[in-house]
Length: 288
Image (cartoon, rainbow, N blue to C red):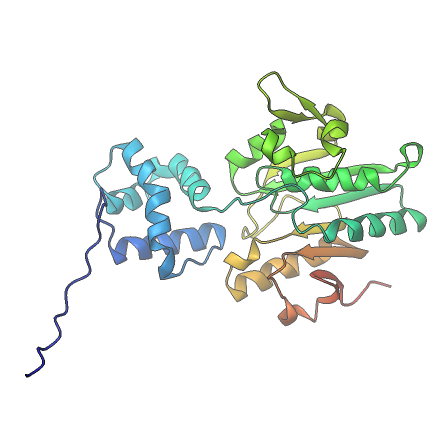
C-alpha cells in the first residue's frame, strides 16, 4: 500500500482571548530589551502573553498590537512602568544561595579588623526584599551586639511594586519559616493577620530605591564593601552583562566583593574582575 503524503497543518493557538502574532512578540521583545536589558527568546512567547493579557483587559484594548502602540505613545508613559513590572521575574526567598552569607560575614569582619567603621552593601536586584533583609541579618549576626559597626544597605530594583513590598517588610508565615532557626522571632514581629513584619531596627538599615541596571547613568556614588547582583544578569545578553559589570567596578572598594548567581559566569570580564570563590568576584586590579 502506498504511503499517504504527510499533512502539514498550520499551527493553531488555543484558548487565547487575543491574537498574539510573532510580529507583536518581536515588538515587545525589542521594547523590554531596550528598557531593561532582558533578552527574550521565542520560547518565552506564551509567558509574555500570560503576563500582559491582564494589562490589555484592564485598558480595554482590542489586542497586543494596540497595546504596543499605546506603550510607544506619549499617553502610554505610565503604562510602560507596569509593562516592565509585568515582565520582570521576582523569584526570591530568605537566605537564597546560603553559601554566600558566611562568606559575607567573614568579609565584613575582615573589613572592620582592617579599620573600617562603616560598612556598605548594595543589593542590586532586591525584588520583594527577602535578599536585602537576609543581608542585613547576616551583617548584624557577624558582630557582637556591643561591637557592631554602622551598617547601611542600598536595595534597588527596576520593579516599583516589589520595592514597595520590600519597604513594608511584611511577609507571610511560610516565607518567614525559611529563615534560619531563631531569626524569625529575633528580627520579625508577628502581625494580627498572621503575617510577619521586619522589626523597625532591621528596616532602618535598608534604603529601597528604583534603579535600572541598563540605564546610562546610575544614581549611586559611594563605593561598597560588597555588591550582590544575583540571578538577574542571566536575562541579559553578553554585551549588556559586560556593560553592567564595568560599571560595578568603580563602585567597589579596593577589597570589595561582587556576589553573583549560581549559574552566572563572567570569565569574559577578567580584565576587570577575577573569581575569588564560588560565584564571588574581586577586582582584578586593585588601586594602589
